[in-house]
Image 1 (tube, rainbow, N blue to C red):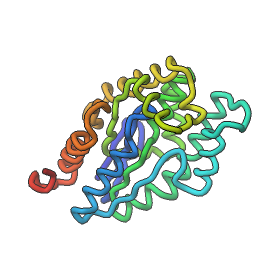
Image 2: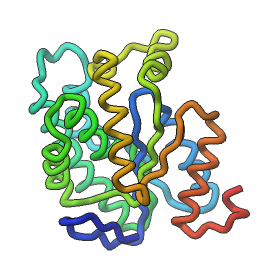
Image 3: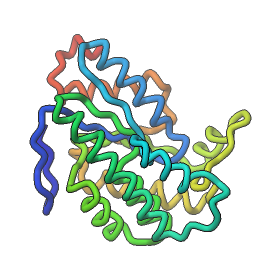
Length: 226
């Protein structure tokens, strides 16, 4: 697929790059797993990964920025840690997989930094986007699946049972409300690159709609996406 973004060099590779985005508790990991299983059953090679993380250094940075107990992390430092993790992820994991012709599914990508640090932390969405486009050498998804979750619903899902919230998940509701708005604004600006779905829909309905959209990108016959 070829992915183009104004002011950024296009990517020319045979693979397909799909990002799953949305607030905490939206069900991104579940839907990435559903899509991976459906595509693999049709003979595609799929790489599932996540951010922050995906590489040894990325996983260490993930612990620093998400786990409690590392002391105060100011907004600029937080944004740069995410960008550093993403730089390694794009260079060491995502690009090589795309060059091999694989389908890459990532749980979070640049939009998460734009929403969480740009809007949530009030650093400015354009500034955060610029840092991350530089960090990734302009690598953009072919499609972003945005699962839109109400912040209150997301918190209920995250705290169900004995689950504990990480450093960002435990932020106040107004922080998560700004993030939700930022995600929707990003999708509205480039609707052709997004599939926006309400996270409240049943898991299998969401999975079917995502597979249908991805199938159109892969030229899967309708009978194979039913």
